[in-house]
Image (cartoon, rainbow, N blue to C red; front, side):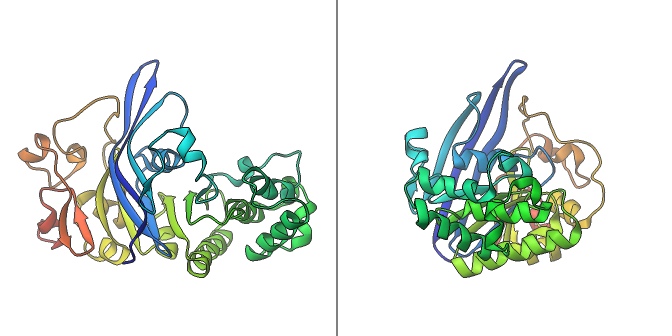
Length: 314
């Protein structure tokens, strides 16, 4: 595995809401190297999108963030907005969920792709126009379509254009939040193939957020399985399919329904967050929170029964 390009250490996020404080992210630790793909997978509400918005410094004022987001060893959150702004879009870029929402309806697609270049003084005028055409061609859209408006693009084309906009300032890390949502199966495959090709050709570190498990293996070699704001398991995709080390991972990859519901994030719990839904839970699971423990060189699980779960004996 290559040296980490992006390293997230003990990342926490709290939201102060009228009904109380919500601890949405509870100590996230993940790494991804240049040219690697990392999936953040799990049920809705587990903290995936909150995690990447925190990395980008794009959470609302109601959020409090603690922890480190290291880019080439530099903590880009160290001085708040002032420090993260220097890296946003130039080093770390994001493809938002719902491509139509990423574009203004009153400006051409080309103008909007060029906007981050002008804001960050990467390119202007004819140079920016030429770069827009290059980017559209890179993502499989004819360059002449730069003069069209978002409503003239299909859903798949808008998603490709959103990826082009994210690449405008040549970032090192691309965060993609559910990039295939609301697309049909064929277009989903095309977008995923595009992300995989860009990861390989450009050496991008890609962090892909999804709850759709078949999507992960198309772009990512590894995944962090998230539950209730924490990582339940870190592993290569093959290990997650063949020998998952956490009951939650096993349930997700089996494709069946998981009984019960995730815990409330405005409350604290003494043991494993998954214990009330876990068929393997023991007394210890309800009283002692498990830590991530290694199951091999590239797999770790936050489960007291991790070894027996991975070995299929639990």
